[in-house]
Image (cartoon, rainbow, N blue to C red; front, side):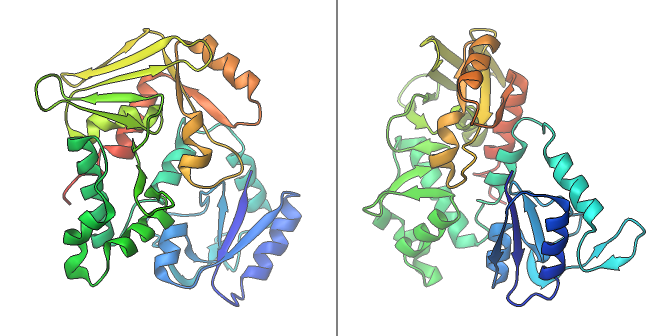
Length: 315
């Protein structure tokens, strides 16, 4: 479990929070200084200090907004305090250690990667549309038309998207990944379209990304993947608003390397299709250091739609 405290410089409420965390748990705690509202939105700080448990804020409530303002809490008796009590912290850590809904951590992770800046969002959508229509990303300089009225270069915007993990850039500055798409071959091949000249073949970063492409582009798709334990093919066809899986008992493992980092490095390789529950369980037993869950078809489809169905929305 990863505990991280986000705070502004010289936050007076940071010491009491760290002291109470020391009483509540023996787990290591890291801190991160946040100096702007943009950083607060990027990392998920709802006022200073904010505790994140595996990237999620256990004390956020409806109406909270990210920012660098001072944050106050309420103790179990409703009194305003500078930090949650030892008992509240211990309860939050205990609850976070319980099995969550499949994909809950991944969903929070990808939500933090959504660009808030309109120009950055426009560039992200231009990249995704290029993948969906041509099967590959645009060259970096080809995005200058999107950024020209913003006073920012395409390279600058691409770097910003890379920094929040909305995309990944290759060493030469070209686009290597724009979730859910990969510019290089993966084990998850997706055909967009049913027939004719409009058919496009793309590669998805992971099983969930592959499942999300149909919802994102609003077209029929056919996914061709493979069970990494048995080598058996797994196909998923989206047609007429319904997904058909083969084999019928196929499932998805949703997991991530506990070390953290960009999704492409520590998450995508562990989000795979399996021909059945037994194959998925065999893989998880052989990889005990990779935390995650086995999701059934409905759970995997729902997560994919939630993560990617809105990315090309115009508003």
